[in-house]
Length: 333
Ligand code: AMP
Ligand code: MG
Image (cartoon, rainbow, N blue to C red):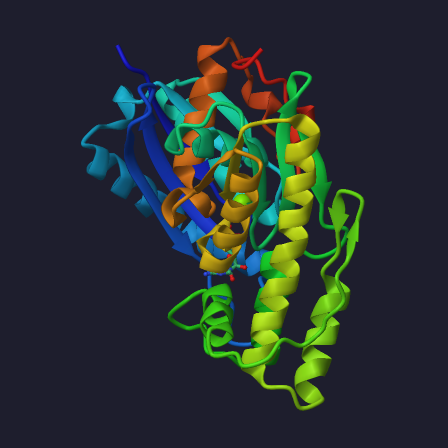
C-alpha cells in the first residue's frame, strides 16, 4: 500500500503545505506568500509571523483537498534547512506538533535536495545537472560520488534577488506578479543592448556588481526596457555558461532548471539551446513545483523514510546553513 507524507516548507517568504503518496501522486500542494510592504525586502520576523498565522489553515486545506485525515498520514516531513532561522522554526514547530500529537515519524529535509528530487519526479529525469535559480539561491547541483554536490554558485546575491532589487529600484509595480516576471515583460520592449559586467569565476558567478551597473545605466539615461533586457541576457548567459561547464565535466545527459526564476522563458530558451548542443534533454520545471512548496518536502521525506532514515524529535533543530553535500542520499546509493 502506498505511504502518504505531509510536507511543510517555510524557509523563506513562502509557506507551503503539500501531501504526496509513495507512487509520486501530489494530493495537495498549497502555497501562501508573505508580501513585505512596497519597496521592502523580506523581513524574516514578519515572514515567520505570516507563516505561523497561516500554517494551521494550510494544513487543514491540504488534508481536505487530499480527502484524508491526519491518522491516514504515514510521515511528517519538514524543511530543516537551509533558510532563514525564524522562518524555518515555523515549519519545524508545526511538524513536531503533528508528529508528536498523532505519533508519526518525523523527517527533516534539506531544501535544495528537495528541489532536485521533485524535479526528477515531475520531469521524469534520472540524473540531471540542475540549475536552481530562485529568490534565495543560485546553484548548479548534480549527483556525483554518492552526494548532491554544488558545482557552482553565486558568490554574493541570488539571481532572483538581483532581479527583484533592480525592479524595486525602477519602481516596477509587483503587486500582482513576481518582480522577475515584470522585468521579463519590460525586457520584451527593448531596442538596444547595454553592456554590463559579465562575472563568471570558474564555476561560480557574481551578481551584485551587475546589479549596481544596471541601476547606474538607467540613471545615465538608458531606457529601463533596454537595461531590463541586458540584465536578463547577461545574468542568464552567466548561469547557462556555468551549467554547461558542469554538463561537459560530468558528461550527464539531462538538464533541469528549477526555482522561481525557472518561470522565465528567455532563461529556458538559453538552457534548451545549450542542452541541445550537448545532446542532453532539457526540462524546465513548471512554477507550482519549481517555487518553494510543500510537495517537494513531502516527497523527499518519503524517499528518506522508505530507505531507512530515522530521526528523533530531539534531532529536529533547524539548520540555517544546511548544505546539500551534507545529506546522505540513501535512496540513490
Ligand atoms: P522562489 O525563491 O523559488 O520562490 O522564487 C522567487 C523568485 O523568482 C523571485 O526572485 C521572483 O522575482 C523570481 N521570478 C518569478 N517569476 C519570474 C520570471 N518570469 N522571470 C524571472 N524571475 C522570476
Ligand atoms: Mg527554494
